[in-house]
Amino acid sequence: MIIPIYQVDAFSDQLFRGNPAAVCPLEFWLSDDLLQNIATENNLSETAFFRKKDNLYEIRWFTPVAEVELCGHSTLAAAHVLFNHLNFKGDHLTFDSTYSGKLHVTRRNNWLTLDFPVDTIEPALPPDHLFESLKSRPQEVWRGKTDYLLYYPAQEDIEEINPDFGMLNKVDTRGIIITAPGYDCDFVSRFFAPKVGVNEDPVTGSAHTSLVPFWAHRLNKSEFEARQLSLRGGFLKCQLRGDRVLISGEASTYLTGSINIVSAVL
Image (cartoon, rainbow, N blue to C red; front, side, top):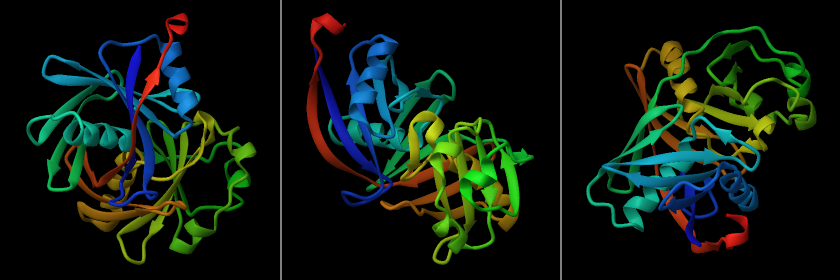
């Protein structure tokens, strides 16, 4: 069996920036073990698998160690592949996911906009090991569906954090979002997720389903420009629209190729 594979740098208009994702279009679903093994072999923060069903595309996302409920940058990458490599007609497509429902993507020039469900966040007590692993104490701690969100007063606080990932891996959560006001944008963030095999994610679309409602309440506005301050960096435009978050970014194709799966492992 030959499976196409694309690697796309999401949330960037240039190569070697943003967040690299692998994208594998399928004709039919493979076993969960095989999907996980492919994602592990790819060794990127996410691999997106999708297949066409009727007038939409079923999609699943895997880190090197686990399937996740929602992933922004690899959904953006999958849409980029459909629009730019698989001759999708039109400027609007829909993915269907098991855990997060229908996810819409719209194309306008070089920009792709994800339409995702908003996260519900609430003030929370810090879990064990959190402050020790970050070697830093935030001003506020919030909790969403899968992640903690920590608020700091200055961009320098975000830039200077150097986590102990071994200790952070003991925190019982998918990920840790840290955020502060930005100098040249509305807010900045970083995202740590050693529990699912990603110490620091370069640009995390799904984290902005928590960040956008948080900053909408704090800044009393609904449209934002945001930067994720990883080494690769990424830029996003976001909008809160009722119970949905619109997350926009660009993407660049790094490679196209194929995976040769021998019958012995099917």
